[in-house]
Structure formats: C-alpha cells, structure tokens
Image (cartoon, rainbow, N blue to C red; front, side, top):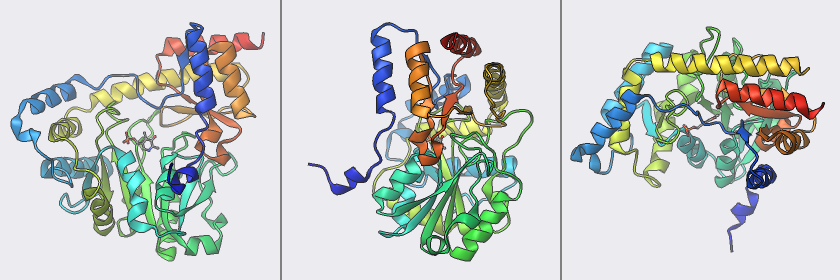
Amino acid sequence: MYAARMSNLPPYLFARIDEMKAEQQKKGTDIIDLGVGDPDLPTPDHIVTSLCEAAKNPDNHHYPSYAGMPKYRSAVADWYKKRFGVRLDAGKEVLALMGSKDGIAHIAEAFVNPGDYVLAPSPGYPVYRTGTLFAEGRVHEMPLTRENNFVPVLDDIPKKVAKAARLMFINYPNNPTAAVAPEGFYREVVDFAHEHTIVVVSDNAYSEIAYDGYRAPSFLEVKGAMEVGIEMHSLSKTYNMTGWRIGMAVGNAEILAGLGRIKTNVDSGVFNAVQHAAITALRGPQDCVKNACAIYQERRNVLIAGLQDLGFDVPVPKATFYVWLPVGDCMAFAAKLLNKAGIVVTPGVGFGSSGEGYVRFAITRPAERIREAIERMRRIDE
Ligand SMILES: *Cc1c(COP(=O)(O)O)cnc(C)c1O
C-alpha cells in the first residue's frame, strides 16, 4: 500500500520501550519519565498573555505571510544581534519556521539530488536522516564518540563522500550527547564547506539552555559562515514553547530562499498571533530563561551527583537538558531501568548507530523525581 520511500525510513527503535512503558502503566507503576526532550515547565505568563490578546484581534485571523511577519523577522534579527553580535537583514536573512523541525525536515528537498550525500552526526536528531531520505539523498554519518569529544572529525570524511556531499548538519549544544562546540570547530566547518561547496545547517536549538556561566556561540559568528550556511533556531526550548511551533532559519539569503520556496508549497506560515507572542518572548524580559536554566542546573547537579555516587563515569554537561550516560548495551539497560525501577530513559541507538553504548536522560522532571529515580536505581542492584 505504501510508497517505497516509506520502507527506507529507519525502524522505530523506541517501539519496544514504548510497549514496556505501556505494560508498566497498566500495572499501575509510578513511572518517572526521563525520556522526553520536552520542558515540563510552562510557557512564561507574559508570553501566554500576548498570545491571548493577539488571538482576539481579527487582523490576525488570516493566512500569515510565508516568510513571517516583518515585525517577527526584525525581532529575530535584533535578538541575534544582541545575543550573538550577528547582523542579519530581516528582509532576506530571516525566515519564520513552524519550529526548527520544519526547516530541518525540508532543507534537503531544496539542495539534495537523488544519490547526493548529506553529512549528519551520529548519534543525532533523527530528522537530519529522515529529511535526507525524503529527498532521496544518502546519509554519511559523522560519528560522535567520547574519544573525539562528541565532535565530528572532518578529516575522517572520505574525499569521495565530501565531493558528493551537498549538506552538512551540525548541532551544538548537542542533542543527545549534551556536548558543546569546542573553540575552533565552527572555523573548521566553514573552511571545509568552502573547500567542498557544502551547505552547512547549524541546529542551535539549545543555545540558551546553558550552565555554570557557559554561553553557546552561533555558527554565524565565524567569518565566512554567512557565505556557506544557515542556522536553525527555535523558541521551543528557550521559552518552553514546544507546543507552539515557532522557530527561525537565519543566515545566507540564497540558501534561505531555497528553503522558503519549498515551504511556500507545503505550508502557509505560522499563525500571526503566535508570531506576536514570539516577538514578546524575544523582546521581553529574559529572566524567565535564566530562571529555567537555574532549575535545570539544580536537576543536573542532582542527577550527576547521584550517578557518580552509583559508580558511573559521566561527564558534567555545560548545556542542554540531557545527560548522556555510558552504560554498555543500551537497550538492555533501558529495559532494566523501566522494568525494575519504573524509569524511562532513551536508548542511544535510537539516535544512530554511534549512540549504542549510551542512554539519554532528559532532566525535564522535578529534582525530587530525579532523586527518587537515583534511589530506585540504587535498589535495583541490592
Ligand atoms: C527539539 C529539537 C529541535 C526542534 O525543535 P522545534 O520544536 O521543532 O523547534 C531541533 N533540533 C534538536 C536537536 C532538538 O532537540
């Protein structure tokens, strides 16, 4: 019944975990779900209020403009200037997205011919791969391992692949490994992209979720980056707005025009009232972001201290709301946590073959629940 491309989609590796979770739920187990990459904290009040007001205005009830309202695009440009020192022309170098997933899923259609390579991190956000498959491109995985500090080694990419590559996805602060981009990495990427004529897509969804004073840079801060690439960003993680579906692609005007042309044919933009609320988020007080980070930081400390106390050798993440734990067989470990302790974590192999050996904890639950999870883990082996 289905088209051939459907069978090219990777198997849904979380299905087994979902089944086990359903079994536990049926038994009435009090499940601690540390699997989801979705903030448990609500969207700040002033942003919700802004949406409610904008939703009442009939001017906002029509089809939005495809690229986003000029006011929204200016707010994005001003935020990029203030936050990263990156200057953007709001008219040509900013495109509204229905969340960054929208841009990530569609970009390959604009740049990849059947058989072309797309360079994507493994483990990585699964949409880099599926977007490539829909465009009938081939994914070349760039392994992120502890040995390389979870950063792709560009010299390891075979010359033949680099020559036939059209796109490269990079993602720092990284989901799922929680690694940050080391000094000099973006410079290397820009040089590599120039040399091989590759379009770079930097996924910076977690730039604002950072700890201990760490400030994540934008890929576009590097000289020459605007010539080869774009950055996808989003309000989802920064302002707890995953359900609202709003984000942005910024950077090279010609690349954005390509993505925009695909999108014009598949969607009709973001509800104007949501764009108004996003303007309020970007231009308004930012203490809500600081407060959320303080909450995550405490949870991170509780989880890391607990895991270390249990004997795990785990790096302390500087950013994102994930902890990437080396555990050996990841499916077996995730199944054990679920069946013996009612804890859901995500097996690393679901993010690509190089994710084997790890599970991802999302600290999107209160500190007490994380403490409880650690206590339950302690009891498993007793
Ligand atoms: C959450 C996430 C996104 C997409 O989020 P949107 O809600 O679509 O903006 C993109 N990339 C990574 C790595 C993510 O974790």
